[in-house]
Structures are given as structure tokens and as C-alpha cells.
Length: 166
Image 1: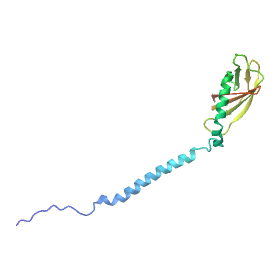
Image 2 (image 1 turned 180 degrees about the vertical axis):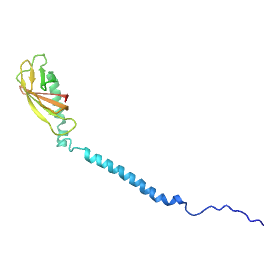
Image 3 (image 1 turned 60 degrees about the horizontal axis):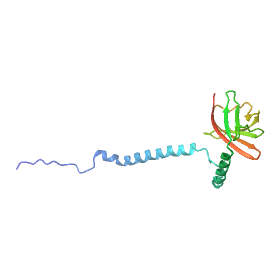
Image 4 (image 1 turned 90 degrees about the horizontal axis):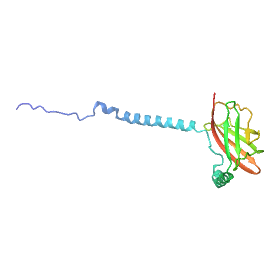
């Protein structure tokens, strides 16, 4: 009888099978490296507590709403201007369009994107409802200005974001 040729397949492991454990190691190494990058970004990008005593601020929210309604009821009109000479001006008129004079006006400058460098200045009454600061030497960039007015026990507040040129 002629010899039959049989096709035998290997029953042992293939050469590439010896790398399978390393595939698992590589997967977890990539996974851990992504986690490390995300951990680094999260831990270095946050500048700290956003608001001190946040619980109390939450409780005081109704007071903030009440103050905003009181300010709206005043009906005052205001316009903030940051001049090219580096001065801050506030034009303030009451409901009838008459200038509000002899008020105490302060302005707080702060950066919306980073902590530090904040400062407060006083604005001088120049008459006709116009309040002006001395020249301000603010660093170039974007600043949030919050102006506070106190006039005959009435409080008024207005905000404006300005760009200080280089």
C-alpha cells in the first residue's frame, strides 16, 4: 500500500503566542501613562479654593438677590470707561438723569484668569456725576473692574471687563 501523506498541523504554540503577556503589559503601561498625564494636569492646573467659606456664601445668596433687586429699583444709569491715559471714569446718573454727586466710589481690579495682582483704588468726584481715578499702572491684559458706590446709605455696584494694552 502506498504511503499516505498526512497533513499534520502543529499542536504546539505559535511563535507569536509568546508575546501575548507583553501585550497585556503594554496595554496597562499605556493606560497608566494616560492616567499619570491626567493626574499631573489636574493637580497643577487648579489654583486652589475658588471661594472661601462657600457654604456661607450659599446661605447668603438670598441677600445677594435682594441687593440686586434694590439696585434695580434705584434705576441709576452708569457708564464705566477706561481711558487711553490709564484712568478709570464712572459717569453716574439717577433715575431722572440727574448726576449723582458727593458719593464714595471705589473700584476693585482683579484678573479673571489668575490670582494675585488685585488692587483697589478710589475715584474722585469731578462734578456732574463724573468720578475719575488717578493714572492706573495695571499690567497689560484682561482685568475685571468692580465699582462700588455708596451714596446716602444707598449701595450701587457695576462691573466691566477691560483690556489694558501693552
